[in-house]
Length: 119
Image (cartoon, rainbow, N blue to C red):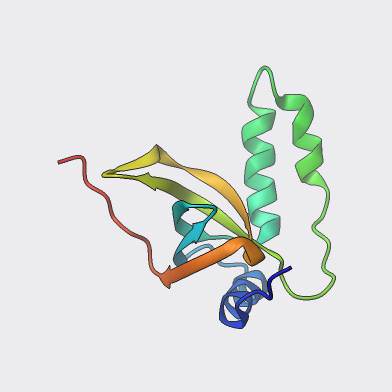
C-alpha cells in the first residue's frame, strides 16, 4: 500500500476541521483528472443523502449517507463537491458532481480547479 502524500493529507485535515467547501483542488487518480472543491465529509454525506432522498428510485439509499463519518486518525479520502471529471475539453457532468477519492490513489495533484471550454 502506497504512503499518501503528507501535504494532501494535511489539506484534507484542514478542510475537515474548518468545515469549509471553498478549497479547490485538481487530482489525477486511476487515470482520471477530477477537478472541483473539497468539502468536509459530513457536508458531502449530507448533500449526497439529500440528492438520494429526492430520487424516486434511490431514496432508500439515503440512510447509508446519514451515518456519521468515522474520525479515527487522519483523513483517508477527499470529498469533492461541484466537481467534474475532465475529458478533453469537456467537464463531466456539466453541473458538477459529488466524488469521493481515496487519498492513497492520488498520483498527482495541484491547487485550484482547471477550467474547461466547449469552444
